[in-house]
Image (tube, rainbow, N blue to C red; front, side, top):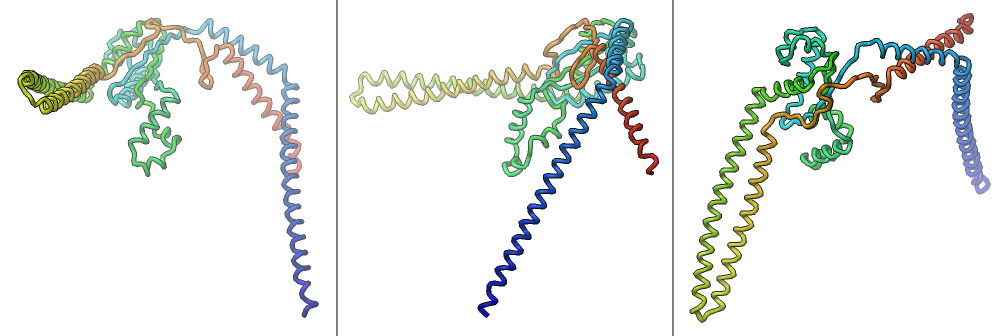
Length: 357
């Protein structure tokens, strides 16, 4: 039996050798696959370079034609003027405001000049010259993060830990942000100020928001009245403590028990000081209420206005960047030329395998 004991060890050594061989083959295939991918990517890059080199003159011609087309359209097209304002929402008017802008654009697209004239209180010529309305929120990424932190603080700690920033952004509507920017484009250099004021007025006269505003103002007035009554009573108490303190000081002259008198004097001073601090807090709250009343005095208000007479809008927006029409049409024609040539080249390449189908 002792002669048979080494045999399992030899079998185990053979199994380990096969395992290492399999691992080596797996790594070898992996490296070959990565190498083939990199090699194919290099071939694609080389073919792309030669493709651009082969058709370079065509791309240049397309770019020159695009610049010329942009120049001609810029000189012959009817000018477009635009202006914008920044609005601050003191109430949750965002959804109503955005729906109003959509409604105005619908009237413009339907050429319903009569309704547009009535709603915006402008002449028919001014209404017919309006091209469109645009609205977008104004908020920085830093403020979005601050809003996210404030939102999580209002949630239960267990639930807040499950909320991620990207999920918060998905449910964060643009119209909820306080600052909004409205842009109006027109064919004529009108007085855009009146149009913006009318858009704001239509929100400020909304029955629902005016009722909410009145409720808030009534609440502020009641709080202010209660604080003023508390201040009046506090003044009366301070006057009472002052008289007590004066009487204590007068009694001190003929009294022999100075320790008792001094303790009473210190107690009176403490009560009077506490009342003084309470008055400061009440007056501070009154100042805050007055500021809140001023903030709620308007449902929505214009924070800043630019170019009330409008400025020429001769730029094209591409991926959020504004470029001149000449560069826009040059890039557009070069891109279309690239797509057409690439398609023809692909069809020519596939025709080689037509006979094999």
